[in-house]
Image 1 (cartoon, rainbow, N blue to C red):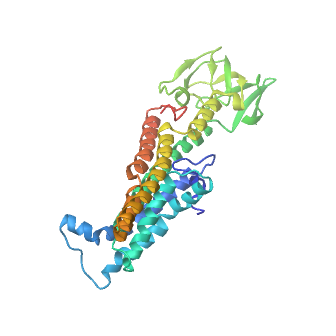
Image 2 (cartoon, one colour):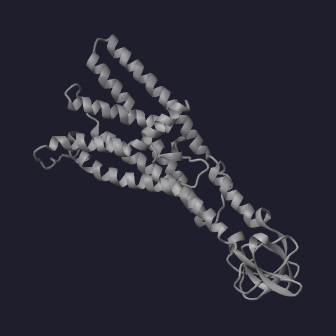
Image 3 (tube, rainbow, N blue to C red):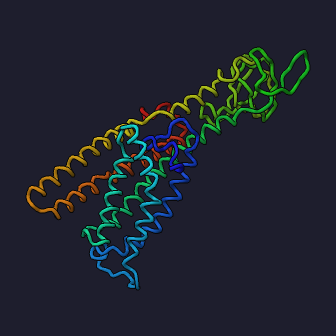
Length: 346
């Protein structure tokens, strides 16, 4: 359960932590390990062999391929969803994790009972495929969020650690943190502007691409404002500091990026509500199905159809599409220099 960490708080949003990259790695590793084990489960499925008209290689004990590997997939690949389901139950907020866990748990139990001869309803390949698909979707989502966190780190690195402050005609090297409004600093050719300010001497072509997205250097002369993080490309300038720290334009952009990362997308909110509703619908439909077949006097069919209802209720498409939408749209926006202030607008 420790693997799951903050992501247990619902599908697709880990609040207030910097572990998106860690979560992406967890899901990536579990996806590939699970996929490798799922392939033989699918290949040795009688249903798949009938569909595609082939016979898998026969060997002693080949009947144990699906049960053994399916159990490993359920425990290893499904653990993150089971952990998330426990969290949703504790918070009384059923969502995607609980819905996925319901499907894979019922499929696993039904398959085990079938191996023991108590049922004739194996779901090993469906169970394996479902877990693989859901792991892939969550991996893509966490990777997209991790890339956004990387963008925030890159913004923080735009500021230099030190600045050359001019006092009484003397230049001294000081930490950027000690600069105050009104200080005059020297920015040499190729150097980064340490704080927002106004040029008081000199003129230079400034690379402001990290602030404005404009790749062509902009001419700045005495009296013009400059922003922290920009680069004086060709000449030295003296500037009087007008804003430092959290009051700079760069800090404002960092705040916007951080807020965008913490915001919920409308599509994700819809997915969460749909998953919660579908959970109740699935359980209700399963109960009605069981009762009706029992009243008809067919206990075996009651169990078979009830299990089937619970397994197919898991929204494969919903669990995969929403993370991919987030991943693709975030990537496209970043490549085109678009800052998404709030994912609700996305």
